[in-house]
Amino acid sequence: MNKKIYFYYIVIAVLYPIVKLICYINGLVYLRGVIYGLIAGVLTITIGILAFKEYGGADKPVWHWLAALIPLIIIPLTPIVMILHLGLRMFLMEKMTPFMIFEGIAVAQFIVAILMFRGLIFKRGTDKQKMPRVGFAIMKTVLTLRSIFKKPERILREMGLQKGQTVLDYGCGIGSFSIPAAKMVGDDGVVYALDIHPLAIKAVEKEIKKKGISNIKTILYSRGTGLPDESVDVVLLYDVFQMLSDKEKLLEELHRVLKSGGVLFATAEHLDPKEFMNIFARGNLFTLIEHRGEVFRFKRD
Ligand SMILES: C[S@@+](CC[C@H](N)C(=O)[O-])C[C@H]1O[C@@H](n2cnc3c(N)ncnc32)[C@H](O)[C@@H]1O
Image (tube, rainbow, N blue to C red):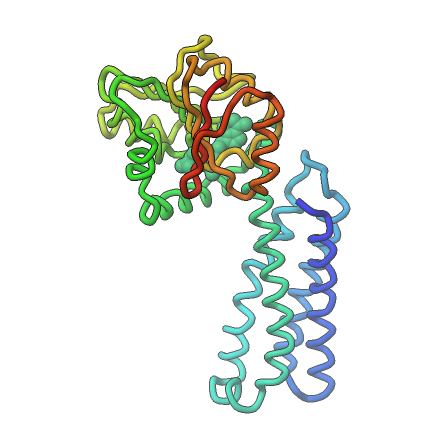
């Protein structure tokens, strides 16, 4: 994550109580609002500074988390407190200008916090830094909701999975793809559901048990897939490439496990598509054969 984001965060956090104080001095807001603003300001500034100082200190992520979480929790409360305190009529009619100024600032900080939070959760799920439990819980909810709109079954059908194939779902998460893929490859096929996060493996295993699925094998990642050479027909890298710390190394590993002529499906979520393509081009291991919607289909060279 860009270090600048912490800087903006602190600047906004400083502005917030100052503007509240100015509004109070000019008789535009009540004292309770100022006290609330000061508490929120001091908390967010302190934690923001600590997070800024420790930026890159992966072993001490707690300040990063708090820096993002505090405004995410406190700031939505601001308009609620304001409305309750001033009354809806006053909020709408008389106090609109000051409200708009400092709530505007609060909203800006809220947006920065979301960016930080997003970065903290989704960029920390790498082989170097495991996603925290709370991050995983949020991701689980996001993936569950995503399945309602983006049907994994439809995506897999478009990929053309065949009966009897061996599929490696790399970074399987909660198994949104592994489970329908297992159905598509049938009893003669097998799906390896691999993830670096023990909670992901646990979630898939729970689902396997619940649904009585026998052709999914879970793999908790550690230094490689552990699969034999040329043993896989299809690799899925859906919504995971952005999280990998050593992308080239993984591509080498996937090249090793894929059968000659095997296919790799990947998405470039949160990545610049040009950079994404460059990474694939660098190793001369895969050739792009199709780009449909968000899915890139590569052939193993
Ligand atoms: C956003 S989720 C996507 C899950 C699944 N592919 C899907 O689309 O439903 C990314 C998953 O990749 C896993 N992951 C991140 N880095 C990984 C790595 N280096 N090796 C294996 N899995 C990884 C995370 O733990 C997480 O479960």
